[in-house]
Length: 417
Image: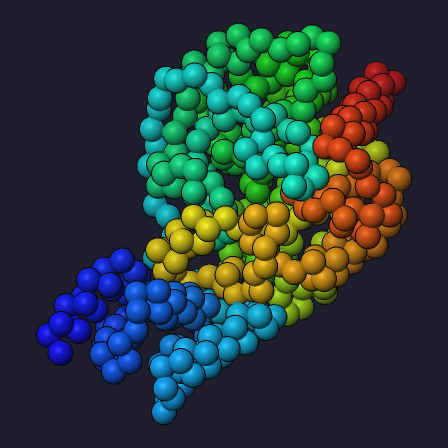
């Protein structure tokens, strides 16, 4: 028994065992002695317990198969877990634990400006070859699914210094059209003009008319844009989800109404806007709640001032899943069927087809007027959703840029009249 106990203690240190409530720790310890689980088996059991707690579903103790031999026990435990994981999740009685929301601090650093191709670009999925500017690193919001947490210290938001000088010294090819986004390393607008971020971006956009600069946000912080002339080659885009998802999975962000109201203010001022339904999330009542958003957009926005609608969904890399479990906070984001998707983990293709097809059909009044695309999704989905596809990322990139430029020119012409 002493040898078994030592073995258990060594194994358990490499899992998230100590993130569990004491009664579940005691339960796993007792079952481990009874069944002599291997390290991998213990890790799977602990991960199941962590997930069930995060989802506020039945606990490990509730679904444990008693009276089984070790092999059958593990098989039935995984089956019961998968049934909960793969069923459409409900947020009806789900409450977040606000005390586990990130508490951030700020830092300033003088370093080379991060400028390069989108870090998730891949030939395995159809990508637009977006360039990214890392004006700020890490995000003050606390969205459960966010991949930024796997790249930066999520508790520290870092502002680069001397942004204007660094931006204006960037060497761009004057004969190339650049599509550049600032929303990949942090939210583009939540900080306003803190650190001179927006002032620097405005001057950069004016100096480089061959740049399409996209500011992507989940905020309603548009005060600086309303008070200052927005360069014509800046488009402002909002990531949208139903209020259910915003409340439960997008902590600290602006509400759905606040985001749409902010977009409408800029739209009415003549600024080109856009909308990202990325990630779309599959849960009970998802159709009804997404449809409400689509109807609001159709009613309130002129498609001639809307550059884009992007569709995409949850896509995880293993380090993000590991960090989610490490935090052990309440979130249902991992309560979903996960299958391989171009080397990452995402919904099965049939669920994606259902969600994207519903979104595209719901916005059919904008077909041919707004540029629709799939973000980081496999090539075959394009034809099934849109009835068209691109042979290469470069052809996708070119079509997108031409569409955006046409909207920018049209908007500039309208302002002159």
